[in-house]
Image (tube, rainbow, N blue to C red; front, side):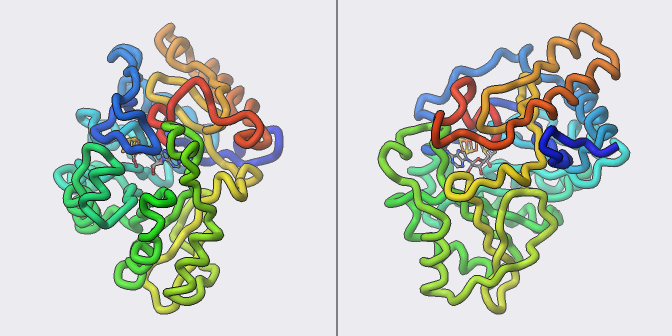
Length: 328
Ligand code: SAM
Ligand code: SF4
């Protein structure tokens, strides 16, 4: 039976946040001092995550993406990858990471069964990378990208949050990467989440402007098929390119009508929508010894609670959790 919500959207994709911790403090995601962290015992154990995923896959989930905070700061992540990979019916297991800890882990993650990674990369300039991430080094992210390719964690997607006066002058350089590499560079509109400072400073750049700036220098962006993806990106390509350019437009053109996803927070809540505070707690029932049937009905309930669309413009973003706790 397919997993359908009230608006007949097919739910096939689950994002699993494995930790609320991060080794970076990106300006759009977190305040400089970080956020209050959950206690260790509040975070789902790998066995608990695997149980939820197994049941969800039995209900129709086909694609699982690990995220954080930064998923690679959680110890033993390869163990979780191995557990999830063994679940029959799971078509794809991927991860979103800042890439800075990936160089030493890429090979073992691939061997454990991770299919591919998305790496966040907002700039190609070392000084700027330090300023945006507050704690990171560009060379580590680039080493992560190289290691991911060598380990076969492809097709590789790179995610760039575009911010006026911060990195918007690099969109052409970043798009140019797709001419030389089989990479899928996706430009994400800044959302008024996480750290609101940038939003208040008017750093938002619409994707239409990103597109214009790329086309003015590199020529037309033609609609493309894009790599197998289950996400909200509209995909384009430059003539003769090896990769694609994606535009992700949560603000200027929302993709709620085709939303196919649920999110599991690190502390065990199912979130039907990134941008709404509605949650269904699974950790309590899991630890009280809930059976398969009860967990199935809680997952079903989360699907039924999916709102038709987000109300970011009218109501602002979620109040209950920071972006880093939800994992994008
Ligand atoms: N730490 C991992 C990473 O950076 O890729 C995974 C978690 S991070 C929260 C997931 C994605 O959310 C990243 O690609 C990040 O750029 C994006 N993100 C965070 N805050 C954002 C914001 N305010 N607007 C748009 N995207 C944001
Ligand atoms: Fe950490 Fe990712 Fe947020 Fe940056 S975007 S602070 S790397 S969770």
